[in-house]
Image 1 (tube, rainbow, N blue to C red):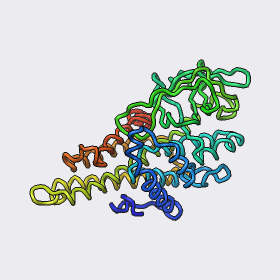
Image 2: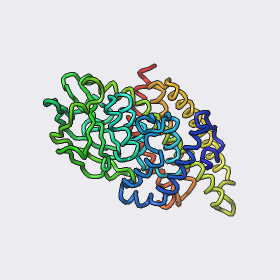
Image 3: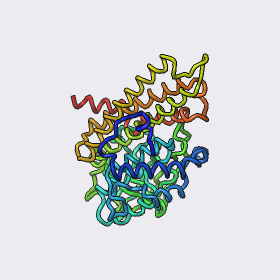
Image 4: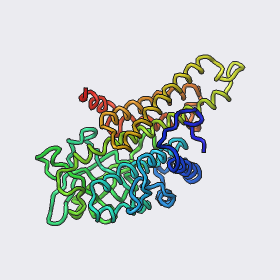
Length: 389
């Protein structure tokens, strides 16, 4: 299938050839045929149903970068990028499989024991388990060292108490990696990641599905842990206190993934807007024929091209093991900032129709805003970049 990037003539990277390109085509068909026709329903219900998750698993769209021995497809982040780009290009941005695939599952792959990998990854690949990671708390957002949720060892179990908020996939997730303090006196060195399978515990409660500005189809929730007991074998890593290091090691991929969603929406917004201004007329001629329109679109296409080249380079570095945290922070902040700018300018070129919910650009305008907040605010990204100077 022809992507918005190809329509715009934007550069195609070497990593997107062959089976990655085939996966993009397959993911685009799946999103177009299985998710897009029901997307208004999912927005109204404020979540994508479990059946769609299982269908995605059956289609090979869950855990594409996990090894085949654990039920995955044996790919790399390039394959995950193809899936996330398909979601963005089709316009079903609220389907939270990006977090499931390239944030939750990698923690199990990189830090889980063989037993944990064999137990959990195949179920994540089929959609039997839906993943979430519970970092943010009411009093701790981008500052992960401020986490208060406590996990106390009690024999061969941990007893977890605390609350989390803004948790993506929060209503559906039955597999949650919880950021806890196993030793509050040690600060960051007292942080541990512990898995909670919600179907198997007591004391776990979900709060309301939070009423957000955008990404309505993506369930985002408060979670409460009230003396939740899990086996000590659910600890990720060979000892307590490794959680903060694990989080820091995985955050570059999370931030790059936010860049993936950003560049995909940039390309879709621009392609749809070019089509619109060619059809829409004012003062007897197409909107595209006005010099202001041409200049605006010239600027946006230039910036989209720069964004795509930068993004492609980041993915190449990442799959070769060379994406550093500072560059990932640059990708997250700059691409999400550009996303906001491009979508805003494209909405303006739609005129009054851009403000109508029936037009895709209106939904993109709402959905784009959170990109500058989650995964660490863009202000935090600039702080991290500044510290490297």
